[in-house]
Image 1 (cartoon, rainbow, N blue to C red):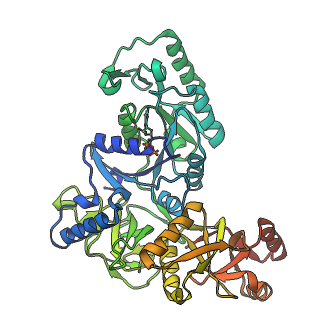
Image 2 (image 1 turned 90 degrees about the vertical axis):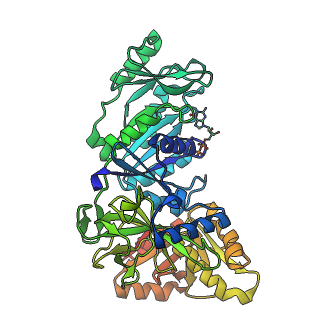
Image 3 (image 1 turned 45 degrees about the vertical axis):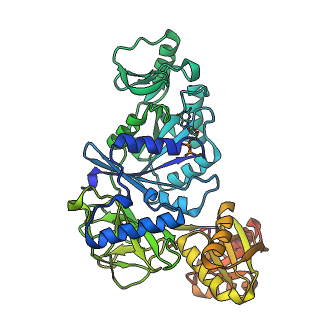
Length: 507
Ligand code: GDP
């Protein structure tokens, strides 16, 4: 049932402890259900072994994209976001497929740049956040200072749900405000092994501090949290197992069940009978021989069944989803179905694209999966000019996957690619070479950013006639203005009030 799903992501700056917390959540959750473990018969089994082979060859893991575990009747879908310092659109888009997030902060460092960027993406969609202040087993900053930093930098109300009894060498456990109990470190490793002190003696100074914190900050309010205005803050140590169970319980008790999703015609409720979903991520070329790819669909409504026919908005004709990778697959009985909030991996040959809506009746168009205005633009120059066709194919594929955006200028033959983070450039060059045997270099382009132009036909035509050298088409054939500077964008906007220069394009 939809109400028993929690679909969430963990956001953090590298090294804050996302991987460690993920592992502990999965361990505590008990069962780790990955795509590779789907135990279904026939076609499904074949699909499973194919994917496993592909994963081994490529050394990558589809399975870790979605991690599912179950506890006390609730199914948790944890969506992985790439852990690079440099972010990509992939990360942004994954956050469009979750209903809530855990923000992990290193107690010694507080809010770091990547945490902040990812937080802003969550805020755009009012995704509620639970904060986990990690590594309290080490010397960290003053807890009051950390909480105030979250409140000030992110403009959020904060409500501490637990409090550390000392940090680092002085660390004596975590006080849970709800129960008054303290989780204690044990043994040589000073881990949490289940020892709960129900009538804890807390040294005076720490007791005072904990009391003060409780009074100084607002009480937890589930509506404020779900509205994205308040974050409950938990202290813990993923490495030493403190606060892990509280995280699971907080997600179970407070985090919202699958939310309705906006469309161009109102919201689609999870309870709607018709099956619908949207593609938020595509992984291409998992098998170099077959140019296969897997599209990740977030199910929004209805009960999906294997073999079902769905129509992708980008294609217009139905496809039968025969061998979906179901990340939720407890046993044979239910391995063939998925519920709203679940993620389905759909193998395909390029028909499915990021941003596509899928529905049984082809009548639903989800909105809010944007392309972001690139902040870095480069010219792609081929080392071997006879490879133009391969390059075009590669750029189309990779833009479909969301690795890059590609712009085909109206004048001239030099294609421009745009990215939002430097890392995407490196990924592009290495994948061009490894997967498409295309050797290319990137050169500076005389453009600083791109804007999607919209407006009435006459105004568009006039603008086009004057600005052809700065115009390009994106992969969908939509008109894009390549600007030399942010100033240029403002100037054109003022000069052309009938046009809009969008920094994002929603598909
Ligand atoms: P990620 O980059 O956010 O995925 O971070 P990792 O989970 O890989 O952790 C980065 C480093 O911090 C690793 O060396 C972890 O062992 C360490 N680490 C993670 N959690 C804790 C913690 O609670 N306490 C301490 N002392 N170290 C931790």
